[in-house]
Image (cartoon, rainbow, N blue to C red; front, top):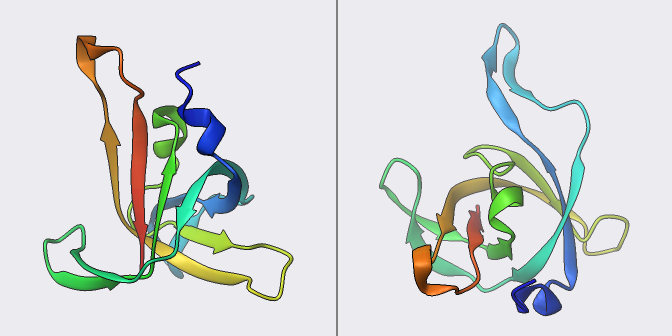
Length: 111
């Protein structure tokens, strides 16, 4: 454990995007809960195509869980609360420290 997990106090539910089918976008059948840290600050960023877009939230989680968040995946924030909303993944980046022994993590931005 690197200690960064102490800050993972939020849970989001992700349905990984798997491509377009005959009837439109296709997602994993079940939404998987992922723990991490959710920052709901709106900011100007770039999407996976490099176009400017507004990001409504950023989520940090383990590098292993970051693989679930492919661009266009469907994510539910605050599931089961009055604040519940569904959004999509804009970008997903995994940050690794190499030999520096720092915490590896993924940073995901939502539309």
